[in-house]
Length: 261
Image (cartoon, rainbow, N blue to C red; front, top):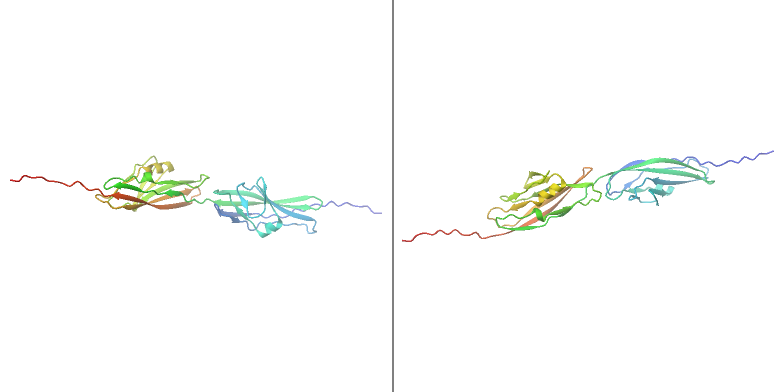
């Protein structure tokens, strides 16, 4: 006689290949080499992919966001290739997990995982610099620093202003600074650079005045430069002109009297 044997299909563990990638802040990176394949070749299994541990502000150029930091992908999407968009204005290491899943027609599943690690290098964003303009009378100080304003454009708080410089001070002019706290004033060609804590740099800059060369009514233009540094060490410098208008003032003439015999 015969005795029937019921063979229960069992899914075979698929392969999964992750990778390590490097990019800059706010720059997409191609996740080349991501892969996975079925081991079973009888055609009874289907293959799907997910990537978990995805930052909620990050995204991919293909796939479906399933929420909770999980994205789903078809084999075709993995084979075609995808890129990772880091969270805006963010840097650091983003560790994720690629999971391949083989599903038997009868419902049994088997999975495999591989790490996907993206290192995002910090990039300093250009600050907003409003150089302003100032005016004064001949032989009187111009309140230059009070007219200059700037702001860091990095919402994650990873960037600070590390220096402010004022250059192109005309020969014979008299600059004045009142250094505050940790601020250090260093001579540079044509002017000075202020370094130190961010708040002390700003306070010292606000104190800056310049008196035109003696007896000069000529206008001149200073150059203002702001340096911003990211915690990763990247820097960016923004430079703008600051015009100074000088109004000539007539000097009181010297009158010498005498005696006529």
